[in-house]
Length: 222
Image 1 (cartoon, rainbow, N blue to C red):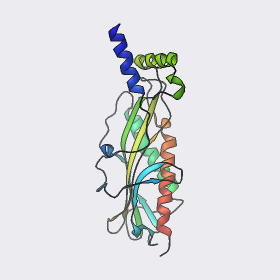
Image 2: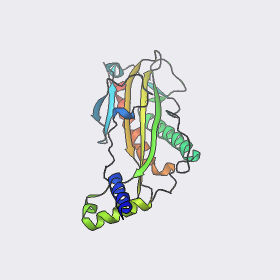
Image 3: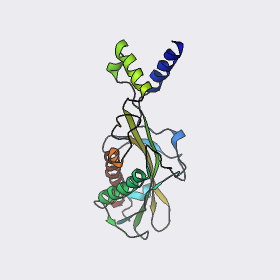
Image 4: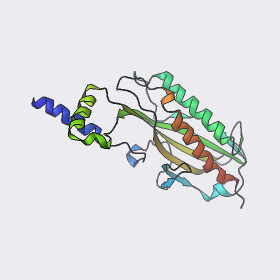
């Protein structure tokens, strides 16, 4: 009986923490050259991110944008829950979404060069974790049921992904903006369901749209 109680307590503790959209320093990947200038900001879509934009971005010189292929940093090894097909699909979809949204703001370039912004995106985290308890589940009876569901592995799983983006001057390589953020995609049914890129498309689309708003600053006149 004591072991059952311990298992249930562990299950309840594991679902008690709600997923946060805020990136903490412990989650920094090292992809960016410096994190000290990052400040908490609100995007046009209302999401909280960490970002920094240099005054140089708003000088009106940038008319084109080159999108470097997105990458996983650090490298993420495929698993049964997140296979290689899903990882490859994430970077392909992220690149396509960024091209579509950035192309609405600036002409797409084939490579770095004068008057060109270079956007270097990285996916720094992909995970699935047990959903936190909803407010109605804190009632005594449903609390026990939620704990049993977690222990049995049948509770829904949150999908989480994080990105870091460096935006640079295409001639000098100077960093003119940087972004760190994370998001929660569509939930998995249980701890055995395989994650696909479809679970994260909404997050990636939102990232691309918000990033295009950052690049709009490059079209402002002096």
